[in-house]
Length: 478
Image (cartoon, rainbow, N blue to C red; front, side, top):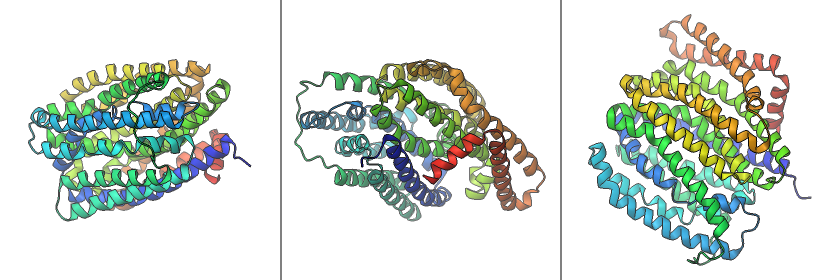
């Protein structure tokens, strides 16, 4: 019997989450060792190089991968045409980054960036052979196979980074680790869905796909601008050393968002695309996603914020003490960003890339201005912009997005309010507990705070949101 959509989604979430957790457990341990080995300057260099690479990476797909997933029919001719277009675009982007490397180096006054940017740019050549298999795998909901490939690639990249860091390769350990991960992804995805066709460089009959992909591409270009604006501004105005601290703080705070949202989006986009004509069902699934995301995200991120001082000192050491304040601050807003990220797969799955584009424009207008003003107070000021200005932009965007499925902003906020309130009480309780335990018992204090926070939050959810608690347990069991 063919599995239902619900069964496919649950199976996809279980495989994606299970293998992602396994990979991240290993990756986290390796990352901590690498952070203790490398310097803030190494991470600052990688952050500077990542500005251009991340930005260009939002263009390289041209939204064609999303168009493959969303389209009702994708035949061999369309796939070969998309393949030809991807080869042209990605080889061109490789050449562009190669030529722009000296300009990026001059902008940041850092000559070491030239070879780093040029080597990282080779990932665009690899991307030509990744996008179609990856999109077809998502379209067919082959989550188990995709999760296995992602796990193997993550382990290979992490082990490469660790080995080179221990061999004193500095920032190059991060560069080569990233490239090895990409190489394993290309190889694995093509084993599952090989690109066994020649490229076709004709655009005939691709009007709808290119139009949809165009909206997605413009959204990603603008998103890349606002998502990297803080790194550009901090690197330019505050320098490489402070950028290193800020980059590590925002990477640590964002890690749960990237991993959990990556799992959700990987499953949600094709799921919404399969029910794009049923607005009522789409609304129900979206509210459930918001409810479960809030239930998981608020305790984890607010918990990290509440113990960030002990966490940084215990795991990373004294040289990373300047990470504490931005980590404390940024972690508070990450749950809202995770809920915000749910809008994209819903809107794209329902074919409303235009609304998604408008949302990204709002973020790109509001946040960079705030980052510029925030630099007056250093990286702490930039971090505060995330916690003050992003929630306001989120409320405005969400109020528009939910109209697509005939809902109101109140419907969404109602799913978030209990997890938020429980996280606030948990935060206060952990603060009191932490204040009562002396610094000499830092590791014990860290463990007790984690346990106490989990007990307080879980107890409150069981009392005030019993249905949501049972819903989450059912998802875990499935």
